[in-house]
Image 1 (cartoon, rainbow, N blue to C red):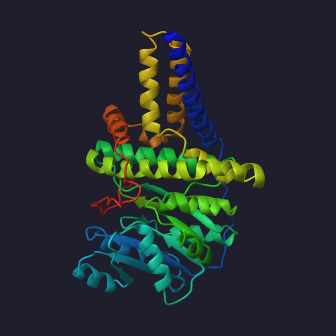
Image 2: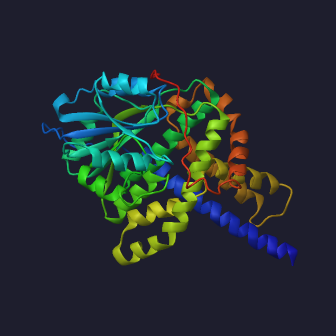
Length: 394
């Protein structure tokens, strides 16, 4: 009887892990089959506002704002607005000298979405499109040109390509590699197969009126995922602009990593509980596969946890007669390793990779323990401090 119960449970677990691995594998292969479609060049320039929400980011915001006003895009066609939340008075004074527009906000409980909602309502002029950055983001000087190209082609929402600003520690290298895997699977692979690109929280642009309307209904700290679902529910296609680069600081130590991932895990759980089952209605009643696909992603096991679970099960199956047999567990583990290797850009295969891989067991353990500390993380804003200002290019 006990063996039967264990056999059923292990079979169910195998099927769950198999679904996860196959999902990732399909988009890993897709990302290798071609390039993301690029729209034709245009001579029409939309009026854009670039929002940079900055919460206690005195270390990096001046550098980011100075870089933002140096775009090749016609200066009369875009404005940079820093949303200053708990910045020092001297920082605000220096920002106004750059010059950028500064909108100061004060909330009892700060969140990015509160800052964006306030700033949208406080603008003194109208714009065609809105671009959202993080306080540490540095746009490549042709970034707005490339976003405008896709927006003029008819897209109402676009996601740029966010890449690492720093890879100097094992953790930042792992974080940079993880982001590029996300880019390959959820942006490039999805776009090539005809799905919408995933949003990432920054380096993204929208039709202004659409953005203003949708963010009014968002209140959680997982604002990018809720915004994405709101767009997809209205069947707004999100384009991935792979050649439009924004440099982003990656986490440099385990403590910051833990705080950040705890918030992400809580947000994923909230998205699953709120949208997963209703997404079936959208799929069958309206044929909204993009919306269903996004909600389905909230049921996927985070990649590091998936790797850890597969490794443990494959190893234990050598000594315990699981159903299915050891062969299938090892085969599934190998398929997942191949999937990750396909999704990792070639530039990461260097001398840093081995040292970073040695940190993976500790990262898995950290992520696993975070599963028991999610209460309240999805409702409270957890600040991720930034320190790097210089962009490191290979």
